[in-house]
Length: 254
Image (cartoon, rainbow, N blue to C red; front, side):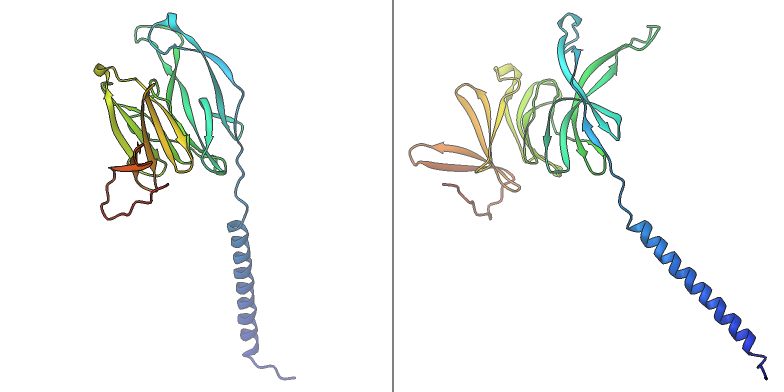
């Protein structure tokens, strides 16, 4: 039987092409399996409460007991926290940080001397295990407490020199505060930190300055208005605070 001399080269090229095709298919399958693999599951948890000695001032004789607990990510201590945590979403929560500061003098010899300090707030993702600090403008961890509702934070802001106080409302993800309103200064007898209380429908927050003095603000999507009760009319008057948009139509709640 006669065999063409061109048959062997053609068969070799065909076999080589099939091998390349099979290798290419195997590469695609392997790449797809890696790309669609389930992400690593992280375990995020808050540990048990522990009592420590905390110095609110520099006087060591005024140390008070304070309860803190660790924040674990995959079984490792990521941070120490103080106070209750607030669930912002089903996967993210916020909690205030507690950390140890080196209190040793340069002339002291021996092991470091540590003291506990209150820090800022942390945002933790339960899925990714990421823990990142939150930026709360004018926040002083020693004189202010944060009241959380949804993704809003209401607190008393303090200027850098401690002479002025502000009513602050911050929304997570926003670079600028929704509200920053001066409440007074330290020389006028203003309280160091007014308490803030949230209301759901409509969304409001009230800053309690004194027993008979309140400031209530209505929070909308990107605006905060001062809500003033008008007893003669039986409805609310809204005074724009920040930001002011004269073209926006107010949606009053009766």
